[in-house]
Image 1 (tube, rainbow, N blue to C red):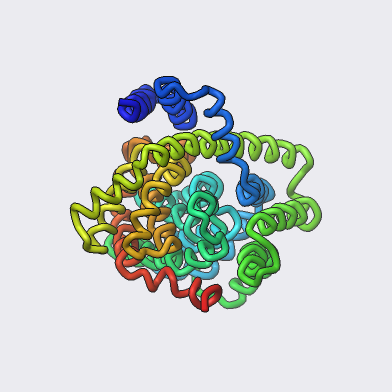
Image 2: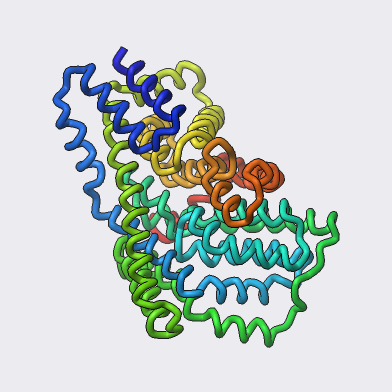
Length: 426
């Protein structure tokens, strides 16, 4: 009965559009009261859930992305990507993807990519005569590369929840992220061929060199972050701090496009976003503790074992569960709740936790592109002025290559685990 109260109250609160953090906390509080447990347990469990050194990286990665946007650095990234791949058919579509790959190495958040680069990309594509559905669709789909290629905020949360090396998770995301980019580029090429979209710029080595010089210092940010973590020079948290300091240095000293007023505004925004994320993490920690205390993970594992002993079928079940949860729940909350339930099952079947992390994150990214939550679609609808319903329709063709990549990564774990085994494991 207590679990019925927990899940029932959560469903009702979500249906009446109570923010997910409060929905999780309130439903957990109802469970605690019904079970006769001390109410102070809610507070203590929330605090313990947020008490992690690794989580300190979150505000710094958020701030680094905000600084890159505000200091005009995204324009330099877009210009370099344009010179590099703009000569291909449907050039600006490929530029869109290339910009997302580069920006992914600085921000690690899909919504930041959509909100920061999205406005630049959609305006450029409109000016060049591209249809709105194509512009919005590829911008939405390419933004999901950010949380897969390091650094990644969702992977940090997953690593904390699953007690998995953040460095291994970051390295494991590189090949999957590039596969996502390649698959989307193939879709762009096919649609551009059908619609006869033009090239954007002619291939010109001199122009590539000029744009590379303009974007060289911003391009060093991913090198510093990923290179520092892989080499062991610093931890992911220290890498986030370095990324923020480097962004401030570029904005204030080198380009002088960042003012103290802008810095204050970005700091306030970072605090607000971080507070929201940490509230979700804390509330989800209570919810996850309740699930663990009631042996939901063990019962789920036993249920699946009674249903099948086939590893591939188990992976399909996990994908289906994560996809359904991702349709209705914010990414960080979904990770915090699903990981304690799924991890014992995957260990039972010999599924590597690093492999699980990548496919769970990519699966949840599809939820950002689908209603009813679809945070990326809401952001792009606001940025582009295109109605939300049309944004949903525009994104559908680009879901196909992403689903294909997800299936490949799910059933061929060697793709994901190649770099972690090469760099971290004997």
